[in-house]
Length: 365
Image (tube, rainbow, N blue to C red; front, side, top):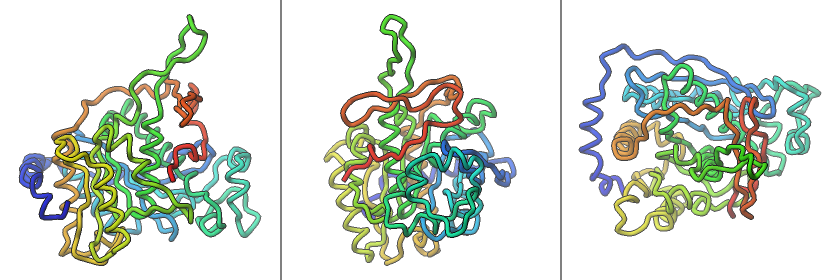
C-alpha cells in the first residue's frame, strides 16, 4: 500500500478533519506520572481532546538514546496535531529515559528476577534507573518494558472512568522503531487478557469471552524492527490475532530506500492483510520515497507524515470507533491466556496496574 494507493481513505479523512476543528482553544498538555507494577515512576504528558474525545492515542518512543519524549519536537508536534483533531494523547518516557528515572519502590523493583539479573547500574544507586543500565547488557530485557505500556493503559482507564476526558474503549497505538515493536508485543498481550468474574458454583474465576484487545482499534508503526535487543521476534505472529483474525487497522510507515524496513513492511502487509477483504483494507505498508527511518520520518516537512497519519486515523476512527464505556479497572480481576491455553492471574483487585510480567510468553519468533 504505497502513499498513492492509500488515496481511498484520504478524501473522507480530510472531510472529517475539517468537520472536527475545535472552536475551543487547544489546551496545553498536563504533566502526569504513574507507577509500573515493579515500582518505576513514569512521567509523561497528557493532551486532552478539546472537544468530545474520538479515541485515545498511546505514543511509544524508540528505546536506547535516553531522551525525554518532550525533547523530540516532531513527537510533540504529532501529539499536538492529534489533539487538535480531537484525540486524547498520552506520551511518556519509558523507564530509564528522560524524566522516568526514579525507582519509587526499590524493594519491589529489585525483587523481580528480570530486574536484578539484567539491570546493572554503574553506581550503587538502588532508586534510579538509566537506559544504559540495561540496553547494552546483552540480555533480552526490553520486553519487560511492556509493563510500562500496561501501566500507561491502567492510568488511562482510571482517567476514562473518573475524569471522562478520554476513551479507552477506542485505543490507538503509535510507535517508532523498537518502541513500535514493543507496541506490537503489548497488543498481543492485550488480545490474551480477559476480565474475569468469580463463579461460586465452580469455586474459581471464569474469564469472559471478550478480550481486552478489542479496545485497540488501530496502530501506526514507524519503521518497526524485528529485533528486541538482539532477540529476533516475529511481528507477523505477534499481530496475527489483532490484524489477521480481527482486522485491527495497522499501517507500517517506512522509507522505501530503507530496504530492511521496506521489506519487513511489505512482508507484514502480505501476511496480515486478507486479499479482497474490506475489513482488512486499513492494514498495509505506507511507503515514502526516502531513506529516513523511525522518528526521522516525521522530520522532513516534504513528507507530511504527521498529516498523513492524522488523515489515516480519521478514517479508521470513522469506521471502527467504539462508544465510550466505564472500564471499572479498580473493581476488576483480569486473567492472561497462556500459549498452552491455561489462564493465569493478570491483576488482582486493589493493584494499581497489572501484575508484573516479563511478557516472554507473548513473544513470537
